[in-house]
Image (cartoon, rainbow, N blue to C red; front, side, top):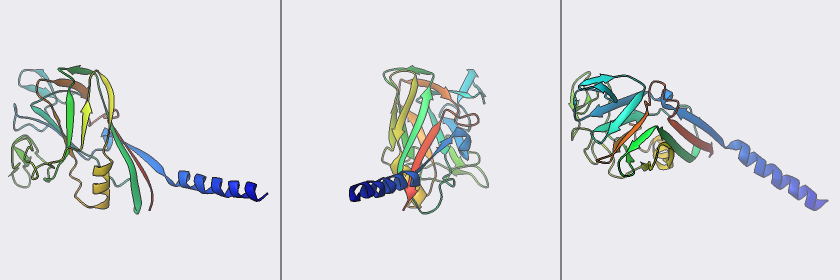
Length: 211
């Protein structure tokens, strides 16, 4: 009888722990800031798809090369207060890859960016403010020195990386949430859906539990 009672109590505690954890999924549509910049057109803020030379479109597919960079920011206000981040995984699928196993490198952005962002400027309104190095390449000024994650694509399809540490830093307020910058390795290319609008394929899953 005592043993059965003990098993019931243990089961109750285990189920309570499971029920207390929660996972939310944010998609590209949840981004409140997004840009696609390129050194080839240093004043454009959305240069993800070029159907003809020097002509860019807001088409929902992006054709990315090493001269591109993607900037995205996910707000974390859907996570309740006083939680502990236990896991955060980011998934980005591709429809085409070219080159020797393309790598899409992720860094945290440190500099504030917004209206008018492009390869040359991080802001153009209310006044123009340049990146420390064009393309947000300034280490420890524009972007974090440490690589947050690397998407490695040996073929078309989805790949997932762990970004728990970044989400934890932003959620706790240890550093401001300025989002990420993604860059490709030289001599590679990938085609993928745009993060915004219609970026349902871009999925950021965050699991948290009460402290």
